Length: 103
Image (cartoon, rainbow, N blue to C red; front, side, top):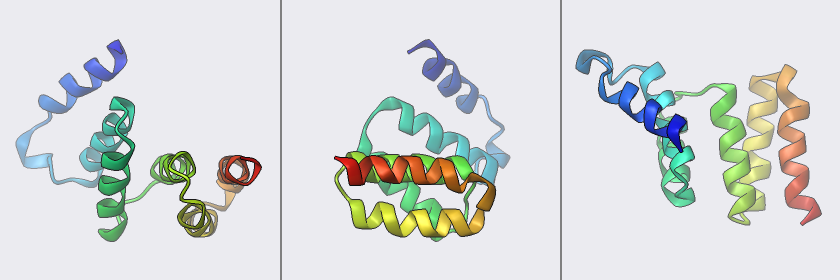
């Protein structure tokens, strides 16, 4: 996908001194998700969560990836954290979670 390629190029040009920033790590996570390897995405997402590097997009991606991997208890667990952290996004988180329950 061209957008993924552009995003990767952007990350490669990111100043080295800022590559440990939360912003860079979250951008890298989103690009990684677009590349399509669910286990790599989940693994890197868990690292970011452990470091408390989060935003609503990380939670959306993690819930979706957990659902896709049939890890419904992990999806439910992260849903509750996400909904508590970003209450205005709860309905979007819930939609993803409900896909797991419907399957």
